[in-house]
Amino acid sequence: MTLLHAASREALASAELKLLDSTEFDTLGDDLLAVVGLLSRESGLRRALSDSSAEPARRTDLVRRLLADKVAAGSVDLLESVVSSRWSNPRELVDGIESLARTALLVGAERAGRLDTVEDELFRLGRIVAGDGELERMLSDAAAPVAGKLELLRSLVARKVDPTTEKLAEALVAYPRGRRAVEGLEELADLAARRRERSVAHVTSVVALTEPQQERLAATLQRIYSRPIALHIEVDPDLLGGLVIKVGDEIIDGSAAGRIDALRRRLAG
Image (tube, rainbow, N blue to C red; front, side, top):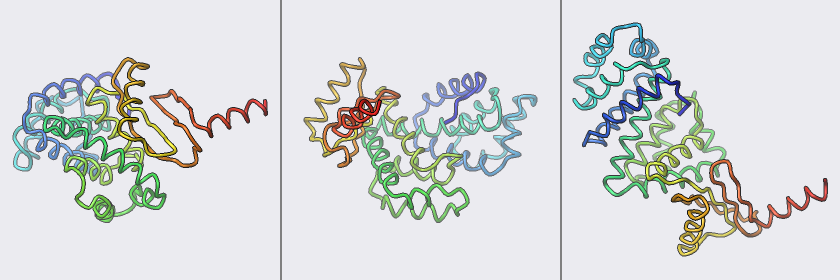
């Protein structure tokens, strides 16, 4: 999601507090994603619902008239609260509703004990797409029919992933909102990791790490960064040996290829 201006950040924070009072997180997430789709298609409606010069009651009445018989009552209540707040512009209103939808689905997975699975599946799906340029191009093509892209995605996951993973990935493909597929899947995996209050370490290894190795690496990184660290591991034989670890903007390069590159730079300098 793009960075929000101050008014939009305040509106989103208020809506998130209301969202967390819910108990029907899956329903709420589904309904909010449907509204993201509606607002993505209807520019006039986006402007009307984010128009801070209009009375809040007019905006909430519009929500009620449009959605009362189409989504759950709790979803209508939350959306009325959302549109009664002040948003900096129409895009940020949709950004906020999309953020709420994702939060609802991830909280639902968390409370059902499935958040680890969802995070891992989103990361793995992102790596699969990143490894196939044609697949990434087809899923990211804004001009391609949505039905065709969804069919392609469903053939890829083949109902083998958690329903929350599938919903989040399908919403990304249907309403990319300027994001490419790989970028969006990485963003979703990071959101799931942050939901668990953990940072994400993107680890590239020449061979797959065993479970004990992963546990030791996670413990070491936790000592370094003084917070829990989630590992997202990718295998790359071109490293020759060792690991490359990226946490935020920081890169720890312990690979043979990295050391060779560093030596070449020193010799060239």
